[in-house]
Image 1 (cartoon, rainbow, N blue to C red):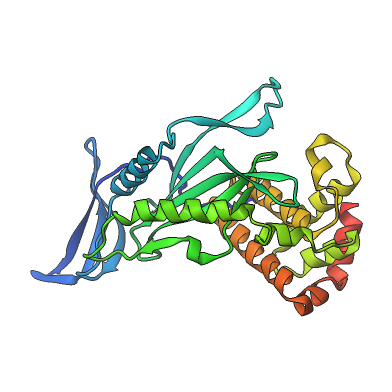
Image 2: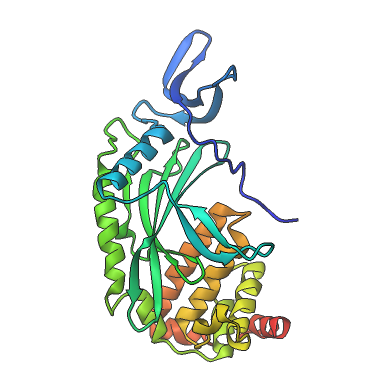
Length: 320
C-alpha cells in the first residue's frame, strides 16, 4: 500500500495564536499551545504544544506576504504559470503549472511554499543543460524547524527538481520574540547570487559530469547510496532506460557519468515519488545530492561506491 504525506492540504491561510495551559486555575504560561483559529463557525484547533514564552508563532500569511513583496521588488512574477516540460497524455497539449505552489502538512503544523521561475535560468558549463530557479519558503508551528528560504533548481528539459548542496545558500530565522521577516529580502538576494554561481565551471553539477561511469558501476553507486529498495529500483530503471531508450526524453542523458545518474535519481523522486510523498521526496533529494557530492570530492569513497554488490546485480537483472 502506497504511503502518503500526512494531511497534505492547500488551505494554508489561517490565523494562529498562542494560548497558555490552564489547570485547576493555575496558568502555565511557559508551556503553551499553538492554536489554529477557527473560521466560518469552525472551532479553534490545537496544532502543537509545549512552547515556551519565547516562542513566536508567525502566520503563514505573514511569511508568504514577505516573500511575495520581495519578489515584487525584484520584478519576479510569482502569480504566473510555467510550462513544466511535459504534455498531457490525453490531449497532447503542453502542461502548465503555477509558479507559486503552497502546501501544508502534518495537521497544519508545517507549510512549504515553492516558487519555480523558469525564466530565471543558468546554463551549466560542460553539461549542455539549462536550469530554472526554484525557491522554497518554509514555516512551522511545531518547533520542528525555523522559518527559512532555500535555493534549488529545476531542469528545463524535464522539470526534475534539484536542491542546493551548500547550506550557506539557505537562510534561517528562529521562532522567537526577536523574529522579523525583514531577512526575506536578504535571503532572496543571496539565493539569486548562489543560483548564478551555478554557471561557473567549478560548480558541483559540472564536476559530476567529469566522473565517468560504466553502466554496471552506475548500478553499484545506486546500490551504495543508502536508499530504500523501492527508490533504488526506480532510479536503476531510469538509469538503464537512459542508455537503452533512444527517445528524445533521454537523449541528452545517455552519457554514462555521475551527473546523469543524479538526473535519474531526481527524475524518479520528482515524478515518481513527490506527488504522493512530498516531504519524503524533498528529504531524499537533499540526501542524494549530498551523497553524490561527496563522491565527487572523495576518490576513495567513489572507488568503494563503484564496487558491484549483490544488490546491484539484482537491480541490473530486474531492470534490464
